[in-house]
Image 1: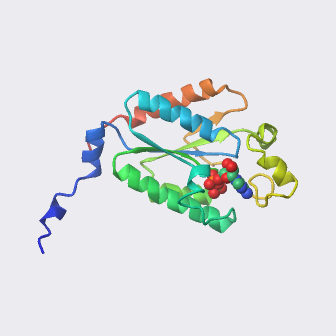
Image 2 (image 1 turned 45 degrees about the vertical axis):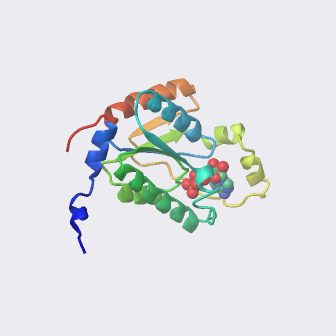
Image 3 (image 1 turned 135 degrees about the vertical axis):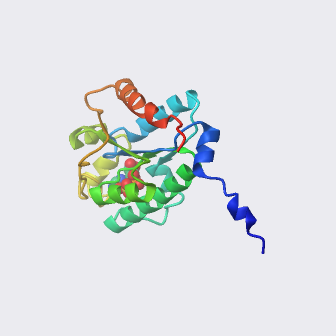
Length: 198
Ligand code: ADX
């Protein structure tokens, strides 16, 4: 069999050159209701308008499709993030920037994601808001249900959340407006997305 096509495999760098960007993974972690999806969507829009090519991945979407077989046990959360990290690696290897909005509640889970994706591509952003504020916002009504015992293993109520030990960026959404947080995020991220030859 003629295997010469293998020699012509297109590299990630060639794809990044085509897209004129460096394929990074923006990984947002934080409580439900902290603002991950809001900021993720706003960041995607802002980057798209500046000519970048991005894929957004969000817990509520992924859990109704790719990961609809999973629960919120510790084991399932690990498998959830393992699969998502593998998906990120595929996108990044195609030159595409990813934005992730997942609670990803423990250091071990985030460390696993970092090592699957590659530390050089992984940008960890802690979307920080106290549990009491997220609970008060209760955008989806889940906190009330969790307090009533109608939802089990809810992050912050009866399932743990470990604050990231050493995130690249912290955005305190209980003190800042979305616009203020977005400005910080954009000015931190954009320089890291510029294409550079390896
Ligand atoms: S993770 O812990 O495995 O990273 P993920 O980000 O995929 O969680 O999903 C979190 C979303 O699922 C929440 O924003 C919320 O809408 C919904 N959800 C439903 N049940 C739970 C639960 N028990 N704990 C946390 N989130 C839940």
